[in-house]
Image (cartoon, helix red, strand yellow):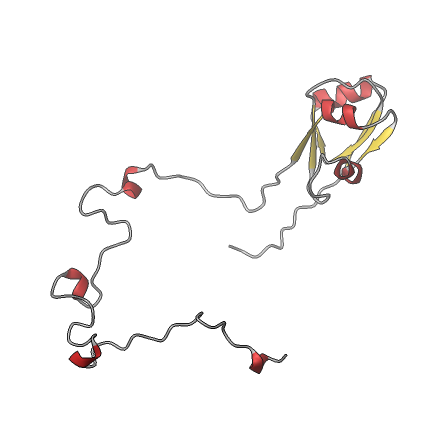
Length: 159
């Protein structure tokens, strides 16, 4: 198959409506626009948000201020109780092992370890961020914490 063999699917394209070409065509004289009025004029019509003169819903709702930060880093939270339930003692807890046990969807996502629950066994945690209380609990159980570097891609196209 080559580029010249490509065709739109049957029924995917419509022929252009030729209007204003005589009364016999069925779309002559007023070209299907009716008689007079704002909508019959060139450039006529109302905005999509117009509601017949009553205060439009878009004007009634509050204006949302601020902007969306392109460089915001969304961390995937992982709590201690879930790690304690899924890992054996002295296990290495890193993005790969978290993905294997189903606590992390994408290995490339940055992780933050939070302190919900207790840790009964030593775990060797490698994460991008760890809360202070989570670090205390892990080290109190005989484990260790290593902070992984996370590089934000600043070369994204401007939107």
